[in-house]
Image (cartoon, rainbow, N blue to C red; front, side, top):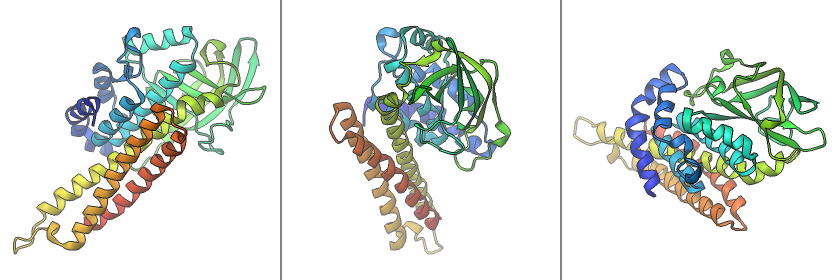
Length: 329
């Protein structure tokens, strides 16, 4: 693995993993952890060095998501969303919008989040249900997004909205814009407990065209180019980390559980087969995710197919690894 992964893994060991159980028990957004993530410079990972960032690549994004998820998958999920929104801003945002948001990220550790999921169309980002009325340079938003990771804890939300002339627009809307609210009481998540993926409500939210990312109606193209790769590969890395951690937990457990005759649970052939399959899942997921990342960075013709394959394989492997881990337990 890369130096970026090694450094992020050590950060996660020191600053994320020790609080993972507390996060799951309390189901609270880990504000203190994200402050440490900001202090360590990870919120500006993808910002070019000449603009005050770390100049990270898509590979660095995947490596950090994997490392953070080995500490706590929920923290990594929220962090991944920040980077995805950042990718879209850096590639398509106006210079004025970039200047405003990047300055806020660098100087104030501003967190970005995605607001794209719908109650009906789900994650089909090309079919946003929110209503937008145009009044000169002002666009008035009404409606709701169904599941906004980081809820009220981000400073900017990447919102997918319909474009009147056909297609979609991507917006980066500040949290303090009047008319925005979050229904945090609706979040009853099981599993990924360190985020607050609740509905985001828009009640006559007036947004200046300044906050639109790129040209009108170009949201679909932006999603294909700058959103899908870091989003899908970030998810693949996080699911890979779930299999890796299940392997670690079940291996430790099966070695420490000892029968009166001194034989450990890990000496039983069936348990060994289960552990081997979890190992295979984790290693195959990691290899496919890394291969897809390399293909995306190289612009290979089959990069998109590899990206989707990595995301699907990693998620299915995590489910299977969880099933086997429960059998061992």
